[in-house]
Length: 91
Image (cartoon, rainbow, N blue to C red; front, side, top):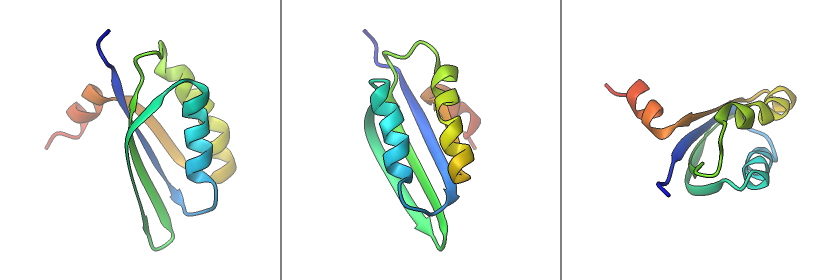
């Protein structure tokens, strides 16, 4: 089976538990984190993860599971297939 990858981006005010809550949702859906990068610029938290979504049929359903965290913590969380992410961010 061909590996299907996606990019998860998280942006918001830095606070305790962001990584734990996002990765718990990924783990609950059997999504493996392949690479992760995060930084804090003053009070702003940013994180990008490359994840394996080969076992996920609908990214929309996974995206919906991030909604409660987004609302609770004031975060912008997006998941996009790697190919779409590359096409949208090509300069």
